[in-house]
Length: 446
Image (cartoon, rainbow, N blue to C red; front, top):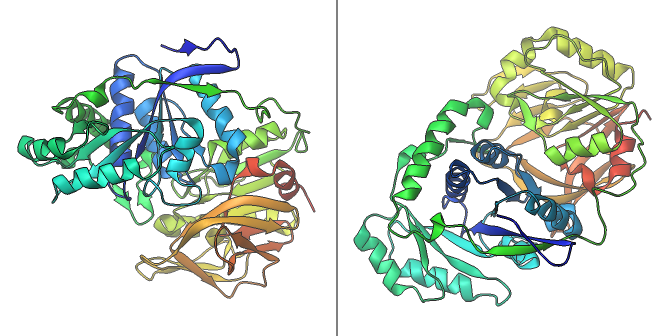
């Protein structure tokens, strides 16, 4: 139940921030299990994911039944994040936020975000191979900063009740054991080289895992996680992104967005930004469609083109349509996997090379485990746009870039940015709300 504050510009809603000492501790599995658990109880659950992530939000959206948005103070700004939480709290019975990496990793970190909005954090820890040490690590995390509230520890992959008791007895009263979850491969989410498998690929399998995860969650001997957390007061920001007067610089423009299993790294916030600028969005599939929608601009987002390279290479009709669109000087934005699709060829992890669009000079190839990731500002002639890189591929033989990304914490040049005719291409994934004017210019004819 939502508790309305006496201040009409505030609203309170139960909220919990799922964090961990490191990656691969089970945060997404447990967040999805909680979302489905409370949804089955008739609660409206809104889930947020910290940082630039495309795959986890799709899984969490399926688990909760509602869209999942990104929260990142650097990428989106404090007031933008504040407004997303405030709007969600008006309709939700529970807000869950899944952190990224370790609790204090990154600038800003998950802890920074939780502290900024007063959301208590639950520490998810894989306790296999340790007992009292798990309590020591959790206690250290809880005491590391006095502006972060830790509600307790979730002991994942706990071997037995005796194992749980050793951890429970070693924890201070201020860090209770919220749940002890046994090792269970039935609830483990499927993965591949850039993270989790796309929800669209394994919808039914995920449903089975969600239901198994709810049963798994309800079997814990520590029941603190199965009750709604305490309400958190969320305030309306002084400056509203949602209600701001935005000039419809793309009014009437029709933008074709590639969306299928090869191209799916799309922030919901980016689609919303295009619509706020006045654009009409039409989705198409470079895998299966044979013609472009009637459009004024094209967006080729990131994804997994390397997993579908043969199908993409053999769809001559859509390749010819995109090539003609490029030759006409029409605007195209190609990000990461979309940029690989624009190159002359792509070599997959099995060293198979196939032809791609050929609208950008160069060859792309997959790299196995080595790659690049991190937050960068895309420095474009149209303006600066907050962005991030996350790829395990490289390109060679490309033209001279018009600029590079500016890394968040390192002086070396970031990812190159190419602009040829109407094409803007880079490994960077742009966060459109960070600069609507620049985005409008990129999708307009030059």
